[in-house]
Structure formats: C-alpha cells, structure tokens
Image (cartoon, one colour):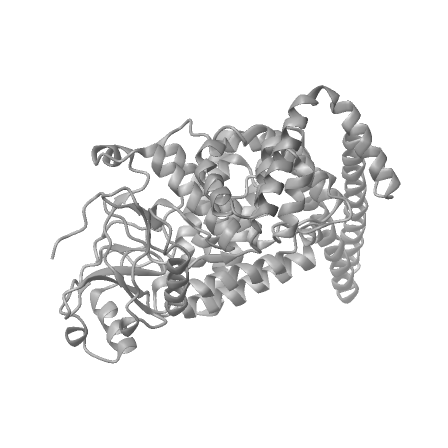
Length: 578
C-alpha cells in the first residue's frame, strides 16, 4: 500500500493532523484506561489555579514583559496538550480571540497542534468491526493498518472496497466520548466555582459559552452527522465549479466510523508545490474566499474550521473539502441584502454592517451599540483593503476593555465561528499571497450574484440605488461633519442619544482604591483575631482560642480574595492603557 506523500493532506474531525508516530510512544495520562474522575478534576483545577497564580505573580512583581508572557503562553500550550482533546479544542478556540487575550497567547495557541500518539491498529480494527458488524476483511478488499494521520479525536486509514474504489476510513479514538463526558462535568464544576468566588467573570457568561462549546464538540464525535453534513455541503455546491466534496459510503459509516472517497491533493497553503503544478495562487485565493462567502451569505451553512488540514488543491486547481464535523448555521441573506452589505463595506458604513450582522444573528442587539459600531468601524478602516494583521487588535484593547466593563456583551457562538473561519482563511490566503486584497478576491462572487439575478427588476433597481448612494458618498466626502450632525439629530428625535461623560483613569483608580481599602480592613481584622487568639492560648483558654483563630481565618480568606481581585484589576488596567 502506498504511503502518504508530504504534499497530501487529510483530516479527522477538524483536528490538525500529525505525521505517523511510533506506536510505542509513551501514553499521556488522559489516555490511560484507569483515570478516575477525581484525578481528572485535580488535574484541571490545579492547572487553573497555577495559571491564575502565575498571572498574579507576574503582574504583582512587575515581571509582565512580552518575553515572560510568551514563556507563560508556551507553558499553557504544553499543559493543554497534556490534558488532551477537550483542552486542545479550547486552546484552538481561544486562538481566534485577540479581543480577549494578549497577543503572545494568541500566537502560541495558533501553533497548537495535536501531538498525541496514534492508537494501535488492533484497536482501530476492533472499532471498525464492532461498529460495522463484520470482519475488516469482509468489509474491505484492503485495509492499511498503519494510519495515514492521527489526531486527538481519531485517525485515518486508507482502504479499498471490494468494488475497487479507493477510500479513507476515519476511526474514532476509543474512549473519547467518555473523556468528553468527564470533562463536561469537571469544567462545569470549575465554572460554578469561578462564578461563585470570582464575581468579575460573571459578565462573560461562562455558562453559556461552556454549553455552546460542548454542543459543538459532541457534534464532532458523531461521524454519522458529519456524513449528513458532507452530503448537504455537496448539494449546495453541486452546480458550483471548482469545489470538490468526497462521496460518503453509508454502508461503511456509523457514529464512530466514517468511510469517504479517497481524494488526494496538494496542501492548500503549500505555494511552492501549487505553483510547480501550474496552478495560479491568486485564482485559488479568489475561489476560496468566494466559496466561503457563498457558504456564509447564500447558504447559511458553513465550515467553521477551514484550516489547511481540511482543504486541499486538486490537479485541475479545484479545492477539495475534507472535514464536515464542525459546521455552523446562520440566517442567510437575500440577494438585495447582500448588495446592501457589500456596498456598506465599500463605503465603510459601520451602522449598515452592524445591522446586517444583527439580522444574521451574528451580533446580539443591545440598547446602545455605540461601542460595537466603533469596533466594526475600526475593522473596516484597517482591514478592508489589506490582509488582517492580528497585532493591530492591540490598538483597540482599551476600547474592548471598556465595552465589556460598561455593558456585559458576548458574541453569539455563530459570530465566533465566523471570526475563527475568517482568520484561518486569511492565514491561508497570506501563505499564498502576503499582499492579497479581500475586496478584489470577492469580486467574482459579487459578479455571480449580480448575473444570477439580472432578470429581476427589483434587484437591478436595488443595485442602481446602492451604486448611486456610493457615488454620492464619494462626492460628498467633504460633508462628513454635516452627515454626523444629521445622525445626532436623528438619534435625539428618536430618543436614542445618550451622553456619558467619565474619566476612565480616575474611575479605574477609584476602583483600585476601593479594593485596597477592603484589603486593609480585612487585614486589620485578621491581625486583631490572630493577636486575640494568641493571648487566649497563653491564658490558657484553648476552646476560645480555636474559635478566635477560626474568626481570624475567615477574615484572612476575605483578605486573600480581595487581594487577588485587586491584582487582577491592576493587570486589566495596565492592558487597557497599552
């Protein structure tokens, strides 16, 4: 059986793939059969406690340089890898949130890949035979026991059906569902603990994020659902040239085994091999962005993790999609709405773009969307005509911090999936052409939308109105002050205008002073209790001494809690001031 060439790429349920490893590799703790719920809880809670302590230590003693943050981030990546699939997925999700965590952590988590060893071929064959109810020899004419690639959720084996068709068989890692169930309970305890003893985390709605994350995770380990997703995706692109989806063989597919058509290809980020094959990288960028716009805007059904392990390039320049375990849905836009949104992006009209995002369910409406609109305006100003530079998000760190501080706000899960997809696609496009232009690459999609609706009078009228509005906007650019005054007048008439005058620096300083005073009071009560307890020990009055020492311990715990909150508040304030 031929082995996998370096230019081929396969995936197992959205995980980054790893090369074949020595089957004798040392098992990680989570892979061992005898791993009790108590041991898992200790591992998770101890990691959380160490992370909080390290952050507090670095902040309290002024050792919070970029170099130190990078060291902490690399340490966190190693810990997540040791904890296994659930936490690898959490790290990958966090790597798309530059609005919430420092850039050093983003860069480290972006490199997070599965490094777990493959499980034995005997276990893989046993799973296939158990799920499909027959011996592997009667199911497949040939089954390669050595996996093409391995990831945390499963691994891929190449095989051949008795009909002669070449296939790949995705086999789920034994015990993975039980591990997810265990992590589901352990993380729920950690979130309840955090909500009870760390009030500052409540505004992030960790409970909601936790439910959304595990809902997606459980979809990933259902290969039968992935097969249905693949067929739906294939149907959406059946008349779309340049996109290839592997066929699903349902006779050989269950919840833990998925058999797909074997479609080898060139890794989509491998520019050297792509150019050597005579394929134009710029055309690939256009095709990738346009087919994703179709998924997001037209179909409302999109692959939420389009990393290089999930896409490849065929010999004719078509894009092959491999993985359909992490699909998400949004409310699709009508063609006239698409035109409005495209022209709003061209005009850098943040209000119109935000309205479209709310309509699609990608933003949650609030009474005051000013901070969100300012953030969208920043993105349009900085990234409309050039690739995304993730470091540019540092420029709005204070803005994001204030937005979360003033009004609890959480992006809906669909929006986080879109952001993750866009940043991943941006990375692929930059690998092919560091200076690609997003709007330029989107033109074929816009042209196709226009051509497909050319017979519609309403659409043509809408297109004309939007073009007229755009031209007027360009001609009247010098009248921005007048337009701003008109908007203020409209908001005043509708009763939507609110004025909020505050000194950010003084508000933060007052918050820290308040916490510092609480720390001082608790420290005094603790000291007073300790002194009284010591005197009672000398009397002696041991029973009273124990009671007083317990009283002192209570105030010490309150002091410690307030001190940690103070340290965290100082860290956040420093981040906002950068």
